[in-house]
Image 1 (cartoon, rainbow, N blue to C red):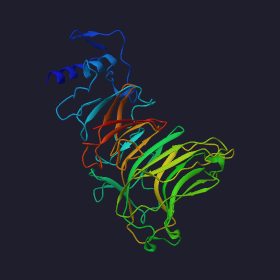
Image 2 (cartoon, rainbow, N blue to C red):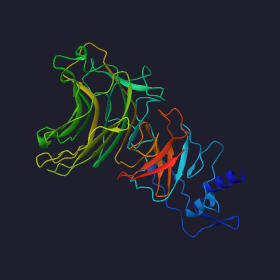
Image 3 (cartoon, rainbow, N blue to C red):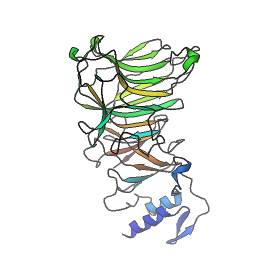
Image 4 (spheres, rainbow, N blue to C red):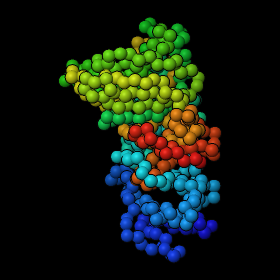
Length: 378
């Protein structure tokens, strides 16, 4: 109990150190946390090196757990779904914004939550439902492609040269089944990044998409339209009737260079490697909007539903995940965690259990823009 009380006191002080068993002011202030913006309120300070040493004890051993049931080590707080925890360390990767661009779990409605910087979609098509939902979730959203040629769910506008997307999807129809096709097959773009250049490019917008064509056997392909030099063929289509967890990592390429990144990871398994020419002298604009799951050219009799759940979008690849292995490459069950505050020495996140049947024995990973990883066993 004494250790717990001391740690709670520790967390409430911004510039303190332990001297002869008494708390006294230190000369160096703690580094500030990055917060979500001016309307996010006052951000609590970060524990400095002296405070962390005091929490560890004189022998430099494990951190004192913050409460019963909490994880020991550099993670402070109760590691449980919906709880906030603090991760202490040194030289965490930088983030311009602590909070993600957007986080939508659809538990309270169809709009993105207040945990992201965007709280509205650029556009939205579909409905909230509990007919199907991802493991650990109570609600999702869906669109009937037989009734609408619009993109499913929400579209997101963004600025910058990078994008990270985490999304869970469920298709209730086998797109390789001719019964689902319209007169021209089943033209399904599961994700598409656009540049909205308008009249300056004759309303022909350079874009990149990942899509299927049912009449071609369901083999997915990646195409950089108007700028690309090649088509990349991906693996098999997802199995109907199963939730899949997907990640997308986009980085803008240079003009007239085939060095743009559009990586796809499904269930922890990378689906392709390669680079794309995304911009040319004729189409120099970067992509600035993303859409999900549109079926054009018609379908067979409906309903033909696509479901979305747990949509996370950010303009950096730096992120926090809970995985089933100590490295990202070795993990197959990955759940994105929601960062709330961020500095080089402390990160505060909202814990999400998601598809993990338990958090015991799992790993918390802090992943940098360059792919670097810091792993914390839970």
